[in-house]
Image 1 (cartoon, helix red, strand yellow):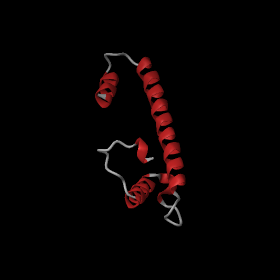
Image 2 (tube, helix red, strand yellow; image 1 turned 90 degrees about the horizontal axis):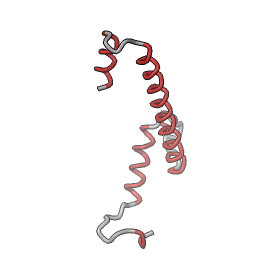
Image 3 (cartoon, one colour; image 1 turned 120 degrees about the vertical axis):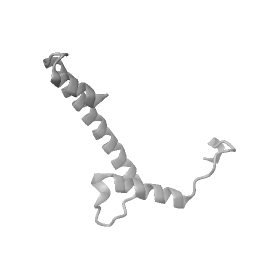
Image 4 (cartoon, one colour; image 1 turned 30 degrees about the vertical axis):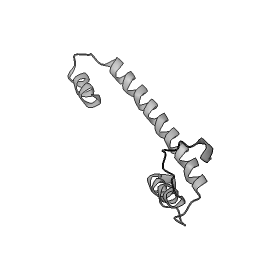
Length: 88
C-alpha cells in the first residue's frame, strides 16, 4: 500500500481510522443504536454505502415529485413562486 502513496501524503494511523469509523457509525441510523455500540469497520462501510444509496434514491424521488408538481401549476402562480423560492 505504501508504494501507492505519494511521499508528501501523511500516513493515517489505526487509531485515526478507528475514530473515523466510530464517527461514521454515529451518523448511520441503522447502526446508531447498535446494541454493542461497536460494529466492524466492514459493517459500517457497507451500511454507509447502503445509506448513501438510499439518500440518493430519496433525492431522485423527491426531484421527480417536484418536477411533476411544477408541471401541474402555472409558472406565474403564487404556488410556483413559493416553490422556486424554496429550491433556490
